Image 1: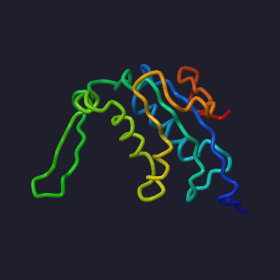
Image 2: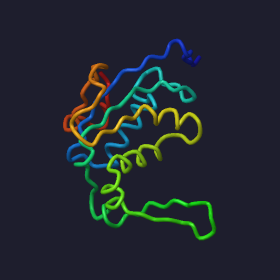
Image 3: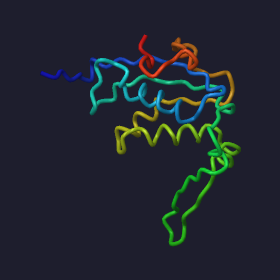
Image 4: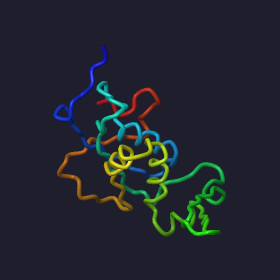
Length: 152
């Protein structure tokens, strides 16, 4: 029999990741697993059981290959002929945190649950953040392997 968590049984921890020289896609997969709660044994698909993730130094994030110049992001204004396109390079120059946020958002479920889980992602361009009072656990990306994602 599968056990599902109740709302009062949910508890969240905080994690801190330094994005210096991290690859966007690989970092986004780690973050999305933590935000969804898939790194926990109590994972419940229809509940927001994830943890908070603080990402710092987002200005020094990188893409592999030529994706920084060649990849395209599209959005539509809702008006006829209103499709707009941008590259990660242009988006990174305007809003550096938006590149990682888009990558993580597309890995979360659509709808209300995904939007709620996305609020647990806190992205900062510099080395400082206001969440030090939560005592976030530091995740070292260099020591991580694919089998041990944020299991502390």
